[in-house]
Image (cartoon, rainbow over all chains, first blue to last red; front, side, top):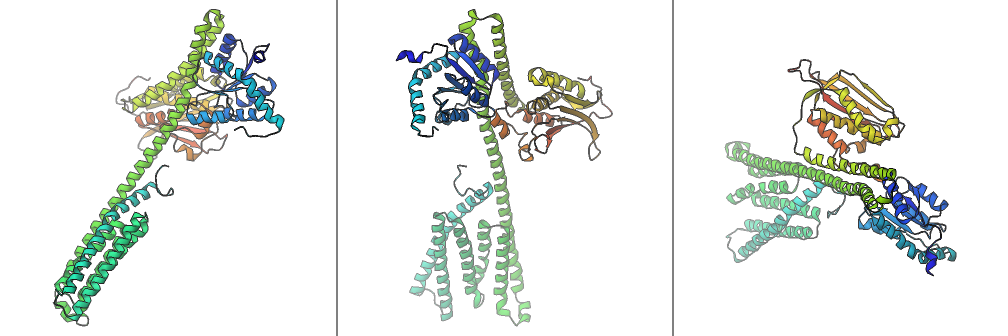
Length: 152
Length: 460
């Protein structure tokens, strides 16, 4: 059913990015242009905590961050039944193919290389949200079946 | 990494092996063919009875042919081993077999008494020295020359054993002197050649290692700059794209704040870009002023540059101990850039509440010839291990931990500091134990103003 993807409240997007200027501008642009509710985290560990506590609809994650980096964060999120279904977008300056590959192996649904305009990020978020219902069900089924299949 | 051959060899060893391989690839086939032809001709000659020989001569010839055939076999084996990349075996066979072969031929020929033929063969003994010189080092050349000389002397003296009176009146002593002089001259030439070879290869290897190290740093740098550029570019790009769409609906303060963020990012881009351009520029060695300059005022100027953008510097204690009258000889702009770099590093790489200490004092150089000024910037950050400190002042050098933890930087700051300090006749170094918390001290040493000034120049 189509209505399944459209929540009654605005989508909550968790933004995990260590560069403050970029994070603020993205938060403002995403809220203003798309009407998303933005939750901000300045590092991977905070991101992990907020991913559990705030139950976001989608997470945008930078790769290179102090402490828990983006790749590690995604693996942790994918390994936890509570967060395994959340669509993940990696937004990073790492432009090499191997890095992109490792982003997908770590569980990203989309891998965006900086710089992208906020409008492109919004489009990407909408896109992963549209396909997420199915993906979410599949990922969660794994936990229901009790199969502990490593996700990358 | 991609080099063929055993991984454990140093560059010099690899070069040396390549040199041996090239020499052997000529020597082994040439030896095989030459000895082969010689043996063949000699066998034919012996068979059809060209030599009108007595029994003893014919025995000597036969032994010589046998030795030549064995030599031919040895060269051939060396050739095969070379093709199978067994360099050591090939070297040993070529050097050893050829030397022993030549030695044996000469001894057999001259044993029964010196003839004109055996004299010519004695001359050919120096071939051994040449051969060893091409394949091995100085020690082996000397050993070969000693063996050659002893063989020569023994062969020449042998007919006179027990008859020293006849020996003294014969031409033998003169022959010995002449022969060994030539033999040692050949040895000396080979030693010179071998030494030259070694030194050339060593300096080539060193140059290669350095170029490779720089190349690695450059690669790392490009990856890093790529990463450093993309985030601020995205901030600027996002701001423009956002404002382009949303400007009419945004409250004024929000617009201003957004623009401020974008400005900061574009400034960061500019700084990065200008330090890149600066590196290009100083490669062309711009002229450097050598004026008396006041350390304290230059330091204050440097401090004022880093404080507003550092953000954290405002809360940080910076202890300064610089006499207001202390002067150095140098270029105001360059000293200021050095101090700005060192200060911003100290701010960037130590905890926000850790103090920074700056001291400057003059002293006499160890030889008492000149007055020097040392300016030290001490932080209480993680410090730098001596192993890593060696690379620190190189272009594009960044510590692994900074690359890992995303501390922004280009790896050019300290390189520029070093170049500036050197251009003013000074030096820069780091003192750090590398133990966390003990911090590091960067010391710039510059020439002080001489007591008697030729012309007083206004301070900067």
